[in-house]
Image (cartoon, rainbow, N blue to C red; front, side, top):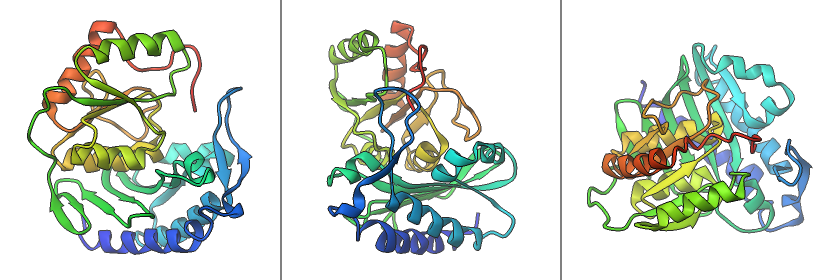
Length: 282
């Protein structure tokens, strides 16, 4: 993988944030223009910032690798057939504004996620926090960086891990059982519906693990690679590697292999794969 790719991707992401996202944050321009939610009672807002940011990134990234496909979250909403590109050849994957609901409410966290996949496997991942300016990057086999400096996840194992759990489990009783089982020997938090926040937070030890149900490629491809390259572990609850073209649900992300195994063991004891059985929380 060409190491010169990261500076070019960083420039594109910072430009998109500067032009499309930051001028609207905390203003009327952050108001949702559409709700994409498939399920009654759920919310999946889209703002003008999402759309403009994706347009900028799609244009800039397409020029970096001629012939590579571009799959953006907002484009897929209108053209689901774009998902067919995820498992074939080189493919850019864009989440122009992860944490849109937070952004629209005038709060954080939110961020930009860009990944590059080769035949369904993430080989490049980049995460930008527009508010702090923090930029996380990883290339397959090359390790991870934060703001250009080499980074490794902390090796000290917590005696009582901090675990965030997705709120996108529609069965409230099932989620309550999961929280209770984890709380026996962990501090349990709600995940803030922002993978762009969670993956750097896990890698730096702010959380020690996060349990996800939905695993859409624009939410997870960049973060999975970043965390794994930083020395943490992100994988399906059964231990299989994450693929961008895998439509299954359920993912454990953890600061270390040991903490990942602890979380996987808790889920196995409950017989819980994190997959949403009754309805899909989009």
